[in-house]
Image (cartoon, rainbow, N blue to C red; front, side, top):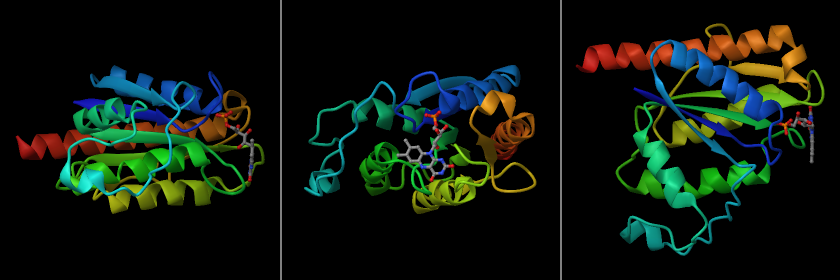
Length: 190
Ligand SMILES: Cc1cc2nc3c(=O)[nH]c(=O)nc-3n(C[C@H](O)[C@H](O)[C@H](O)COP(=O)(O)O)c2cc1C
């Protein structure tokens, strides 16, 4: 069983990547394999709406999305961490989500994978809940099963996340819930 952690921040080693590391640590402790996609080391271009992926299995833009598609296909659970930019997730993450339309066109390749979201803002209430909701929208559009932190919507922190102990608790609870639901599904599908 594998959990993929996606960080939507263009900043290397900052809050989103730390939140993903912390979530994946929990997954590893429960025996999951883990993998990551960090947008701090990838430049994903926006979709050109050329329509080529309706027919083919690949995208005409050669920028590393093929690796993203492979990692998403291989995952049982996907956890996405995003900064809040102007009240929602940044353009870098939007580009990745839009380009993932290819997987939707391949017989809903992400269908029934479990998804969860984390968000960090520079303000305590800077739009983290809305950002999480927008990430959930993407997951629903892909036919995924969406989970929160077993109480509310997901992991919500305030920069610097590592000093926000209550926020980091919601990150841990979200990771646990994600693992729990993947485990439940696997147990019943066997
Ligand atoms: C262009 C831009 C817009 C931002 N807008 C918001 C915002 O609306 N609300 C908020 O709480 N923080 C906002 N921030 C602050 C970031 O969400 C915050 O610095 C966050 O920690 C960045 O995540 P990272 O540390 O993983 O890169 C904004 C930052 C930038 C660069």
